[in-house]
Length: 338
Length: 290
View (spheres, each protein chain N blue to C red):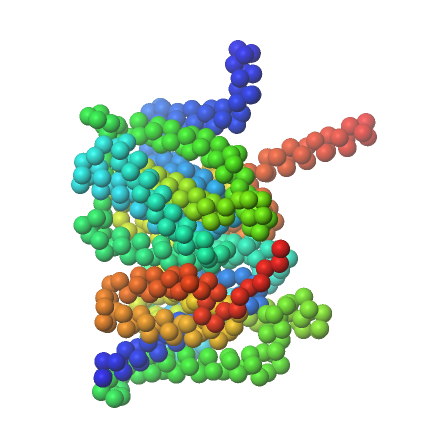
């Protein structure tokens, strides 16, 4: 037992992520027991997918200091590709996901090429334009997306075995945990350090021998690959999509999730996704009186993002840390008096 | 010939609407050092105020528009005093994140006040005119006139008056401007108020062609931001010129090439121009201190 605990402590934070995943995977069990309701499980699944996308966006924004307002379009691209592969071409789940992620990553590289010339919030604008073009594609290419009628997909199938809803939920959790592992590893690898250096000062980073051009492209392609993966997973859980699901507002919300949760933090991204996508429908709308107000979710998220950007730039994930510090301080002061 | 004239007039109208939105964004960018991503939703909100005023009181379009503009000015001042004033010391990235937050807040406020049903809004004038074989609605002529007249007036104010000088001084360096006795905080507040008013006018010109709904300004907002980048952020003139240019290009492409892909082609060409010249058409190269 003690050995196990030691091992747990040594392999943090990976073990933390694993425990988090195992706990989250119990949610379908709670539905079977009648504690959670069915639609709440769907909402949680959405939060999991958005958490994956937020992790990718955090690598781009938090570590790389590059901005993207086109994330939703890349999610949509992932959703449509997997619908096309599994539906029209009747591929299995795994090859479809792999090819989808590869394609979105390559498209991310193309956007990254753009990023090598355009800077800062100009870049955000450029990604916005790319997203608008993609949305036009979603609407017009009926053979590929089925336009406003909507595209359909099934629960994931492995060879001849088709998963049901609960198993798919567990699969999403598995992907989330893998995404957290990978993000943490990337952030603490040479790539992550190179991205951080680039964010701090490009001139200094270039002087240290970091290839700015390469790492901008790498950052973009990682983040769009996450977005593509997220879109594809959501497609296989919700099993339906249409062009209006991938609008600018969603990109904005994902951006908000990164800022609110905490830049440069893996757990912050998950927390941010939960606060932005989970808290309004799961908690706020169940409150008496204010739960019935129109547009409450938007105001909650918007005010939160303004407050966090103005007064708490590190993000909500550090609240726990700061509270602990306060307690220690208070205890030290108190201790001295006594 | 008449088709080309028709396209030209259409471009002047849509370009004017775009120029109003663009001018609002560039005014705020120069004085507050941040892109105002919320310009579109603020205009949308003010168009809702005007449309709601019209349906509640039954006044004609002009009075309602006045109400909308007054609403816009107060919304602009309110935003500046409540939010933007407290962000002066923040990095420009944080400021823009704050404006993104404002976008989300207004998307929530609009259904809270005005419900989920789109409203309708009237035109400024009825009837049509024939100029050089091209048929033009009177309301389009009014829109063209408002666009050109407002732009001319604003450029006159910025270039020739004392307040314009204050705006330009704040734009070039607000710390030094403050030391020279320019009330930069009032200049910034004025910029937000004027920007909101311009945006709401643009929204009220768009409103008759669509309805007053939550997404009405989305595409104009995106195009206006791109116009700012395309024209270059160093001048007031560049973005406005780019706005008219984009409108003309868009109309020409949608007539001669494809109406469905016009937006996509315009966006792609803007991206192409930015790749060649990242500072925009009239932009000066930004010198970065290391």
